Amino acid sequence: MAARNPVLLRLGRNLRKARENRGYSQEELAFRCGVHRTYVGSVERGEYNATLLTIRRFTRALGIRLCDALDGIS
Image: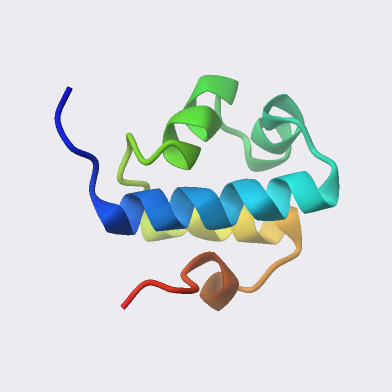
């Protein structure tokens, strides 16, 4: 397996933390964002490079700011 990009890993950790803080399952978040449940998991694991528009869908569903999802990414 190829090494995952640290930027994608950090984004995934930030989104997972926000999802867990909200008490949402991956399935619930996927429903709220209009994406497949497996896609949510893949983004959280840093396997997919989500588009800015998709990240925005996640942040809106989670009630966080876009900059919160990108926290720690330089």
